[in-house]
Image 1 (cartoon, rainbow, N blue to C red):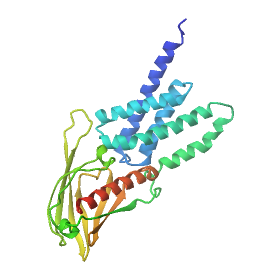
Image 2: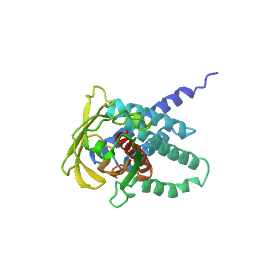
Image 3: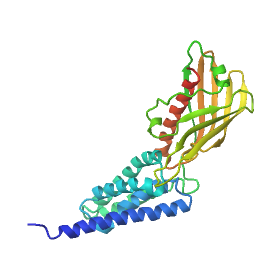
Image 4: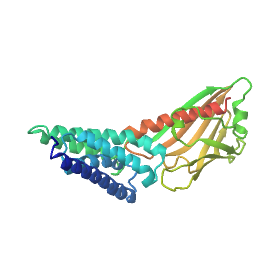
Amino acid sequence: MEDPHEPSRARLTLAALLAGLFAAYVLYRALDAGRLDQTALFYVGIPAVIALTVTATARPRTTVGLTMATVTIGLCLAGPLLGEGVVCLLMAAPLFYLVGLFVALAVDWMRGGSGRSQALVLVAPLLLGVAAEGAVPGISLPREGEVTASRTAARAVDPEDALAAPPSLGPVGSPLLRLGFPRPVRAEGRGLAVGDTRTVTFTPRRSLGIGAPLEARTMTLRVAGRGPGWAVFRVERDTTLARWLDLREAEFRWRGRRLEVTLRYRRTFDPGWYFGPLQRYALSEAAGYLAGTFTS
């Protein structure tokens, strides 16, 4: 016999899903307008709002499944409707799922027995504390960072001569950087005297937005320091990584055939406990690519 309550349950589930997506969209617009779209309030607040909204609307037997489904649909719609790129979605998706899962499990647990609702006193401050990073002045993990990679040149390659010549850019081998990160296409400029410049052109940004045009991406660097066995390039202009982090400078040190590359940067996304390791690993791969480029 067909369950007479099934249609109403289906409609209620659909209403909860739509309510969760609408609440996420409203919060997205508010945080974007307030320039808080790179803070933990954005990446923690949106999935938390989704979980709480679907719970309040449908009161499902288990909040986890409906929350995960709503987050998945929201991420799929974020590309074509909000113009987000592949890299942004790939980097943000695990955090959205993690926060959504945590809040959904917490809600289900608190609904599971008398007295458990008092746990909200512990869960709510924890969630608010995590979400405050970057949104509240003074609440942030250290933002400055640097990574170093080194390579030994082939016998016929002098790292200093290779650095002074116009760069010859090869394919990117890092699996992470091949996921959708910008790849260098060509580079112009030569010399290692203070003031000499390099302009690197990258693959254009391909937003997932409907009808969105390709956006050119370049980076201009200038030699800001020079000494025996070392040179420092300072980033003068960047339309390549600026949406993700603030790359400050690249330092090259060589001794014989050994070349060491150090990239210094400033993290601009929160929460730091999540984006910090991601950005550090990605830039470590980039430093390794540069070291390999000038030693092969």
